[in-house]
Image 1: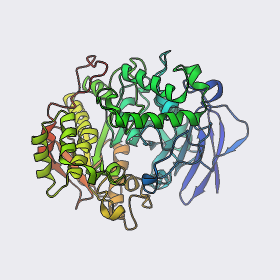
Image 2: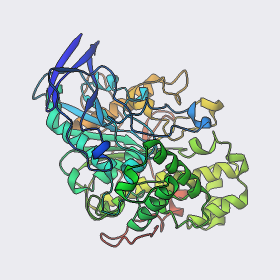
Image 3: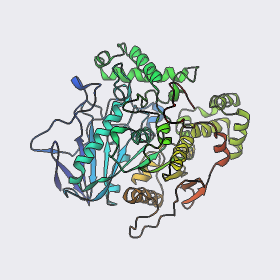
Image 4: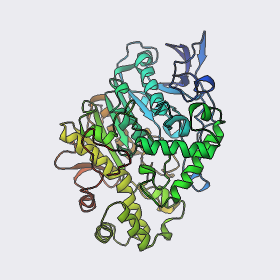
Amino acid sequence: MHVTVSTTAGRVRGRRKDEVTAFLGVPYAAAPFGARRLRSPEPPEPWTGVRDAFVPGPSAPQPGYLPAMASLLEEAVEPGEDCLSVNVWTPAPGRTGGRLPVMVWIHGGAFRNGAGSLPSYDGARLAAEGVVCVTLNYRLGAEGFLLLPDGTANLGLLDQIAALEWVRDNIAGFGGDPDNVTVFGQSAGAISITALMTMPRARGLFRRAITQSGAGHHSHPEDIARRVTERLAALAGAEPTREGLAAVPPERLVAANGALGREIAQATDPGQWGESAGGGTTVLPVVDGITLPERPIDALAGGAGRDIDLLTGTTSEEFRLFLVPLGMGPRITDEVLHGFLAGFGLDPVEARGAYAAAHPGATPGDLLSAAMSDHAYRIPALRVAEARAAQGADTFVYEFAWPSPVLDGALGACHMAEIGFVFSNLSDPLTGPDAPRELSDALRGAWVSFARTGRPDGDGAPGRTLPPWPPYADQRLVMRWGDGAPGTHADPGAATRRLWERLRRPLPSGAHTAGSRP
């Protein structure tokens, strides 16, 4: 059965299956190439008649994953120029003025991979819960996150804002409430959302946020952002200007971004590349003082975004996704481990002892994974919760502890392990063949409850019982999922958390200086 809905650019035709109608590949902005390349997003070209919205649009240009990771992660569909589109799943299409909560997903992928159309992000099961689910694409890599000499920056974030403006202007026709929008996302998507919470241009576009495995530390100050632009342009054989870079084929910029990542991974000066040290990322949101006025964690500590409801958290063993498939764990010696711990600003002997006590029988590689998980994910998430608590804003914090059975269980509760459970798409590569449906039902229920009411512990849905979930606050309460019955724990992992007491702290508003890495 087909259903037609009007948008500001023209009418679209979706396909209904069971109780949910999907509208795929709907443009929210014009193709960002040709004369529009490396420029702010512009409205989509209008069309006449009815546009079929049966298949997703192209993904943004991207490199794909290394062979060791490809079997664990879903690859985006064929990239193309007309890549700025949304996908919408709704149980109530065509009901103008509808009042269903809206959930807008921003995908991860280290700011260089991913798309809103990956099978794991299919929004049909969420829509069946009575929400309108939207997923989106945004520009990645050099196309989306370089700082150009004329001051252009954060085009990928501006794409996300354009998509949210599309939601504001169109979602009522799909049955959604434009005044009750929750943005949710993972990894680079969660980092993006934390930035959006502090960006003036995004103000008023969403009421709630769910950030999974990404927070407010990962951004580049202007000096590092300029270094990234200049080096990436050199690797692409181009001048580091809009004109120079726009003359380069997209695949060459993608290749140059990959080469830059390899250089960053081998850099000996950890301060040279800021939050991209190690090469896991290259481009990041840029603190340009205009689109992104401050490093997001600093802005949050100053009160930005305190009117936005927030649910945030991490998986228990984030970094195992990166160490295990590449076979890096067995190569980590105590000497290497101590070097990393010292590089984080920790006392290596004290830190090794605390992590070893928390993980009995762990190898040096296991301990490095735990410390890296804290540095990149857990501690930044807790700093957001602490900063908001000081501003009187509640934050609900979770830990996802269900271990993936993939690779004979070696991945543990790794980065991305929760995504299939949130969307209830349990054919996700990391869930394995017998993922517990009841865990997915509970997790999905909490996310939908939060989107509907701002509280993740019950929205009155018939037959749904969710565990009590108080905000983080003074007791440091964290909801633990996937390790027995869901329940809150007071200050879990306190011994290792205390190691970081003086580290990864926000600076006072306006005090963040270029190149600093607190």
